[in-house]
Image (tube, rainbow, N blue to C red; front, side):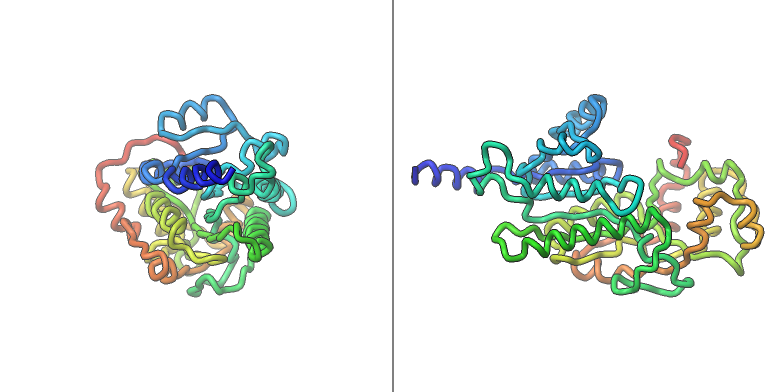
Length: 326
């Protein structure tokens, strides 16, 4: 019995650590070349097509759906590390995160009496949104600033963050407690995910004197921050993953228009916007903030490939090819 246990312990010391990804979308896929070198990577998928795609990227797919509690039995006790990037569903709070935490906390089938194989992840990273801060009238804020969100989507993200923090704290007296770090991202962009659809529709922006301030991050820089947070993130710590230069929102759309060869959109007053723009677009225009990123640079030792959107557009001049419409 003792010799078998020693063999098992030795196996766990030499094997690659297992990483479970919940929500393996564009940003996390950008991190896969780095992650698959260091982990045996598993990811939940909801379709055979997605499973085949991830197999080609070196990932072990697991058919599971956060909206179907029974399917989550497959992920119990499987991971040493966790990346959670699945968006919340509809309704009050984030029921998906609640189901996920219940699943990864549950011993796995025949392993229920073998605690060494049924512990929850030792470290986890949650990809949240800077939308949780809500409107701050365009002033500078950091991770300690009040969360003033009013939109349903941002309130669900706040719910997810709180659930993850409380879950981690509840395990704090256990040897197997999970250390959770949270990264908060603003508007994500890349060469193939620029907001061209809005510009092509001709949706107007706000006049300069009434415009809101927005923040951005390139998808590659966000992916790198997620990887760093897996190892360097402090427990219960949130990090703003934004670039160095906030913009007036219409300035951002002008940059995209110039880069892609589209005509710039017109400008209207905020009062006119209330009549002409969609509720979703208005919800973004009604929030203005400048987000600081010093904590991530200091604690994660994170360095930006694209410190400003100007740098991105300059380095990629002439490389744009119309693809997906964001």
